[in-house]
Amino acid sequence: MSSEPALPQHIAIIMDGNGRWAKKRFLPRTVGHVKGAAGVRRIVKACADRDIRYLTLFAFSTENWRRPPEEVSTLMDLFVQYLQKEMADMSSEGVRLRVIGDRSAFPQDLQARIAAAEQATAHNTTLHLTVAANYGGQWDILQAMQKVLVANPNLKPDELTESMLSPHLSMAYAPEPDLFIRTGGEQRVSNFLLWQLAYTELYFTDTLWPDFDVSHLQDAFAWYAQRERRFGRTSAQLTDQTNTM
Ligand code: IPE
Ligand code: IPE
Ligand code: MG
Image (tube, rainbow, N blue to C red):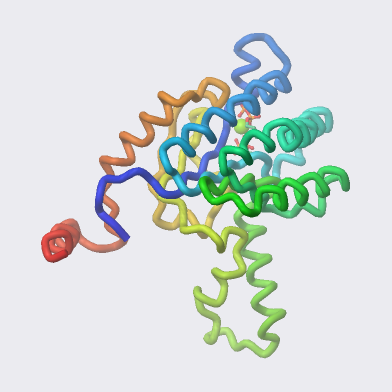
């Protein structure tokens, strides 16, 4: 816990607004997704350059299967292409990739590519990049709960603690996000990291994801630096703590 106005250690982003970016240009929504996917790289690089340790991107929600099949299929294709084209470069920059979400619903070749990319980058330590795909915060809590019950079949309700559940959540390897960014103007969490966002600073911008560049990321960092993270305490307590340290 820190009250220092510092850079966030972990950033979680809902990359929203690809469809509207395309619609404004009278283009098919899928063009917006292509443009949006191309922009991921510069944000990953900007985070790596700034020594951000964890970046988590929401690529596909458990609810996004409700979209038209051709749009879902474009999103899957882009994911495959991303793993194929960008991973080698990112790996040489020290990026470690992990994918969270229920990947069993993906085509076999995509599952294999995900596993290969995770394995190929497992030794990297500069930036931990997590892509949330077929991910839902409710799914995450539920699957963690199921694992607790499998490990402790005779568990009584009052024996269940937060520390029993949290190691089974998908992002148990990372600290909880410090900064959440949602592009595209909507002010909602859309079933992203529900448990993990408990004390995250929430930043919403109207900028559509394909337009979101490093200067917009800087704006979010500047906003974050102004926040006082109290974690339930009073402002005076934080000042006292800083003075006695
Ligand atoms: C985000 O952009 C990408 C995904 C959800 C996969 P959208 O496709 O949701 O774009 P809008 O919100 O319709 O503009
Ligand atoms: C959230 O965006 C999911 C991703 C960006 C992957 P949506 O566009 O699906 O969210 P809603 O439907 O507007 O809440
Ligand atoms: Mg959207």
